[in-house]
Structure formats: C-alpha cells, structure tokens
Image (cartoon, rainbow, N blue to C red; front, side):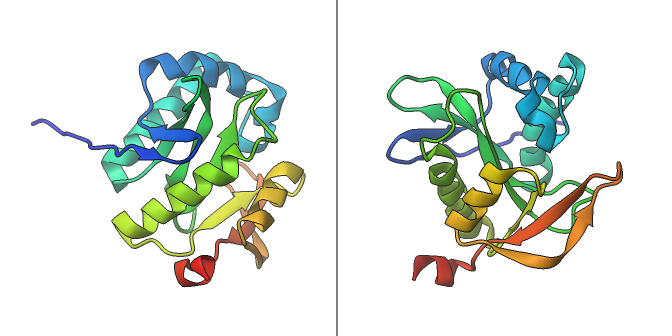
Length: 177
C-alpha cells in the first residue's frame, strides 16, 4: 500500500508557504533547542525536535492539513512555520505559528497565518479555528489580537499540565468584512 500526501504551496507577497523539506530540520531543531521554544513545549532535545518535525508532515497525511514551512521569497530562507493542526488532545483545529530567531517583528507570522487560515476555510471548510497561547507569550497574544481573535472564557490544559489561553479566530465572513 502506498500513501500519497499532497501538500499545497501558497504564496503571499513576501512568503512561500510550502511543504517541509529535510533541509528545514536543522534550522527548526536549533529553534526548538532555544529559549524561545518555551511556549511550544521546548526547549527540546534534537530527538524531540525530530519527532515534532515528523508530526508536522504526519498531520497532512492524517488530517489533510498541517504546518507549512515559511520561506522568504526574496532570499529563500526558512523563516518559520505556520498552519493548522489538530492534535489528539486538543479540542478542535488550531492555527499555530512560530518564527525562527531573527525573523520576528516583520509581520511574517500575520501574513502566513492569514494565508493558512484562508486556505483552511477554502480547502477544508474550517472556519474560526482556535489558537492556544501561553499567557506569557506576549508576541503571540499581540498577533492573535491583530488577526481579530477573541479570547474565550476558560483555559485549556494539556496532559502535561501546561495551561494555555484559547483564542478564537474570526469567522471568515467577519474577517473579510
């Protein structure tokens, strides 16, 4: 039996949202080993980063959507990852993003999140996903607000005890208005 997974390529003004490639692992592993990964389960060992890397690709096979690698159009550099994920313990599809060191503050996460969110609706009918954000992650909280997200009552607690806030993205009709 053969499984074929089709991962679309999306383009924005400054980014190419594409499938992860093996050569993306090194910069992602370095990011996950660093202190900025503390809000998404890090810092991680190289093996933990490899498992997460594989899970990003596996999500496409299991759910039909997943994380995109974010490539800067002007340079071809990997700048991060963004997309939709739905892990077995989370309550519903989640829009998530992370930028590698040195690429923050340029609006890349917002640009990618909007493109991925639009694709999730157009290709999968997923409207108004959530984002699960650590209360101490000020940049992601600011981005959620910029994207029009609204904090929902109550928090979500992962199996490991990590508590995060639940932010609801606007419905497509609202976001387009």
